[in-house]
Image 1 (tube, rainbow, N blue to C red):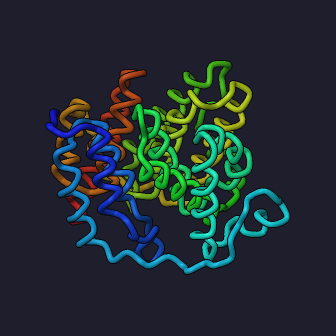
Image 2: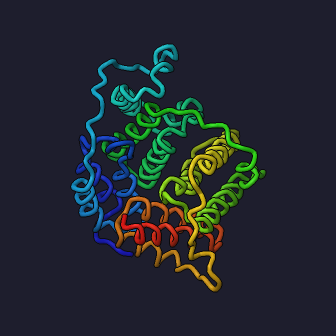
Length: 320
């Protein structure tokens, strides 16, 4: 995939178009537009970003966020802890992170809040965590990040804080399906994402979307690893493993009729899958195809390709 627009220009144009767009549309769905825009820019589809964003804005009736109005300084735990998980305070959280990011390097702010936010990364099926990961990738990929990219990190962290929800305790049955941490957390993440991708491809669950995040949330952790001190890698992996297991406890996983289980099935290439996902245009097909392509580059296992193929198959056949 090629483009005449730079990565930074594509991302910043998208964020400019998304000014004032709410965090959710109802009931209970998350705004994926900033994440997908960054994904399209990453995979070279930069000429498509603006069109995709404008189409998404027409399709989704995004809700205005709560007004907030009680500023947070972020310095006193007695002030900010009660606001964790309070979506009414989402703009207070965003403004607080915006102020901190204007006065300190963004990696410092991320690392300061990482241990505070990680235990609550399950909120809205990990989307605050994932949105923050895309913002981090954007900043890390840009030599001189602009204010809109920093503001997007504030949005990701603020949404994560406002939807802060502790990761549920997972059943032993689901935890046994997923690999425990090895010494090398990068290899552990490959083992985790390929396992969840394989489970997804085998079951092709209905509804098709929720269990996608058992792949994309651990894959998002990989975007943070270069910034995290080594002593934070294992706790982060354990949290993501438990979150993925909790998803498999929570959502139906026996949709049946999985083409990936048919004799002789061979999934398309990661490149073909990404092209097809972009052509289809759905948020989750694009994000899963990109995450699986990224993970496949580290561990060339066909289960990644099968998972992306099965989601696209389900979304098309269910008329979504």
